Structure formats: structure tokens, C-alpha cells
Image (cartoon, rainbow, N blue to C red; front, side, top):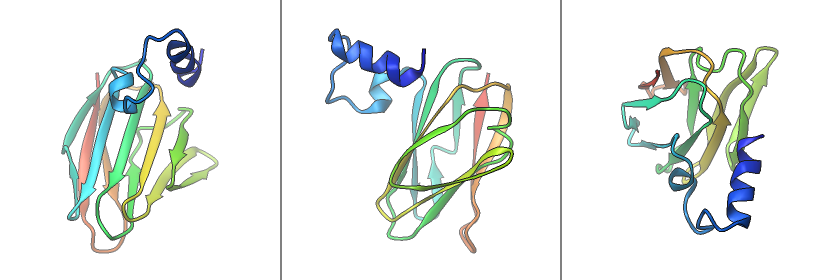
Length: 133
């Protein structure tokens, strides 16, 4: 059953508080903040095979990109929020997040390891990592 359907069912039976943020509603949800040309936290950990949500918030007045390197190979990714996702024949490539914007990526990690993610906009030099164990 898709993660959103599970969350919707939990809301209907009163197991989740509808006012709660997605990071509180799912154990494998992580918030990433883009601010002052850095990602915080620098390293996050997800569980292999468990549905996850990455919530990326841009707290700057500048546009930022979230570009995961190799993390989403052979992985279905659903994107919501006000970011502009980019896909190619291999799947999800990146999402551009406007100033004060947010993007949510819903997926299930399929490969363990350490995966870098960057902001590939000129001069930003933002880099962090996701560990899937």
C-alpha cells in the first residue's frame, strides 16, 4: 500500500494528528534545511527498504537545487511542494526549490550505502550525505 494511503487511513482512524508535520507522522522522515549556502544536517540516515520522506526547506532568498547523486537509481520518487522537479529517462534527477520554498520527496530506499547530494547551481558549493543502512 502506498505511503500516502497508509497515512490517509491512519488519519481517518485517528492514529495521526492532522496538524502534525510530515516529519512527525512518519518515523523515516527527515527535514533538510538549505540556508546560507549549506545543507543542515550534513549527514542523515535512512533505513533500507522502509518508506521515507525527505522534506527539503529553502530558508534563503536564493533558489537552491537538491541533486541526489545515485540515491534514486531504479527507485520511484513522488515529489510534492512548490519545487520544480526534473526527471529524465533514468528517473528523478533534481528539484529546484524557490526562495522560502519546500519540496517533499516520497520514496523507499532500495540500495544501502552513502550517497552525496549537492546544490549544483553556480557558486553554491553545497554538499551533504544520506546514509542508507
